[in-house]
Length: 170
Image (cartoon, rainbow, N blue to C red; front, top):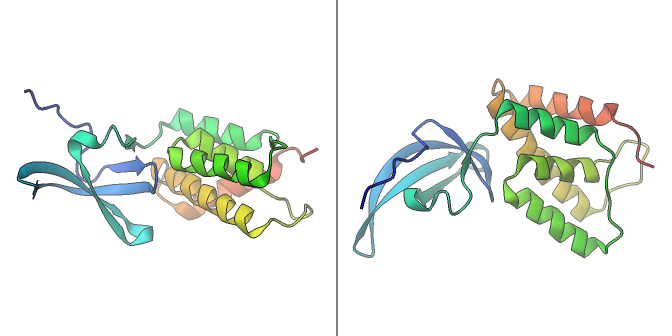
């Protein structure tokens, strides 16, 4: 069986759907149940967490490279759009937002940020709304920073300015 060359290497930044942006620190072999497994060792600095992902499963779990600059531009365009809030019950919407955040899809994450963003003059967010908003915002900020110059402060400012410049929700 030919061994497929992985598209990821040490020092690459990757997006792991359930955790966001991490950095591959090494590729190591581990024996698991008598089998030799090659693993990506991914560090998530902000969360002080290390994840080991079998190299042959990386694609199956949705691990991907950082978004291309044009995808980042599309995500920023998405933020400028009008919030689309469905009339469904909050528990159903919250579940959908959670799925979008954990999909690892930058555009879907931007949709969550757009839909849950509140301007200062709008009604207060509930605790769970704020939790989802902050989780989506953090994922979006980290990936935009990693794609750009690596500065999360700059990325956060750019996102804030984009959200502030958009048309008010009807």
